[in-house]
Image 1 (cartoon, rainbow, N blue to C red):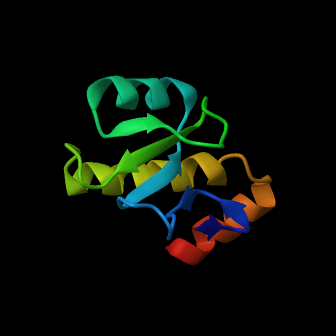
Image 2 (cartoon, helix red, strand yellow):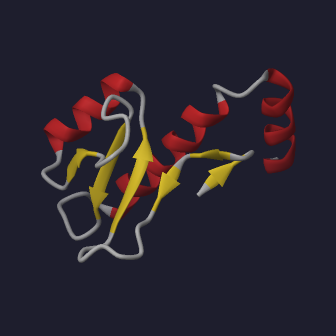
Length: 92
């Protein structure tokens, strides 16, 4: 999944278990891995910034949604200011 042409999440279609991989800031990524058994560093991604959340695990749905939103924000804040303004103008 992309926002303004940049990847913020992935949902594999060939996994045995349902999961989502999201981008996180470094400190938050580590905290999530420590707090939830269903979170691990993402396979074949930059393990500093990407976590895989197994959806059959111990993370509540509202928390999963929070981390998807966090992932979008992580990507948007790295965009050039002009694209950030376009994005925020389009989501109001």
